[in-house]
Image (tube, rainbow, N blue to C red):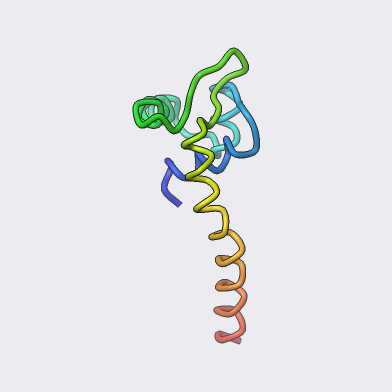
Length: 85
């Protein structure tokens, strides 16, 4: 999954400080995370708050569109496993 979607996915679980988000994103390099957060802020998908970063209303709408992919991916992976056994 692209890093942008990983960040959106992680922030859907709640706001996070930079360090918390870095941990959630598998210890991505600080410079790359900072760059992606700047991009997401410029696109109005993420905002900074006193509690850290969080999804904007638009970011939450994006998450609601991509969230069903999780269930689909599990079904797909299960089917692939069955077909290869």
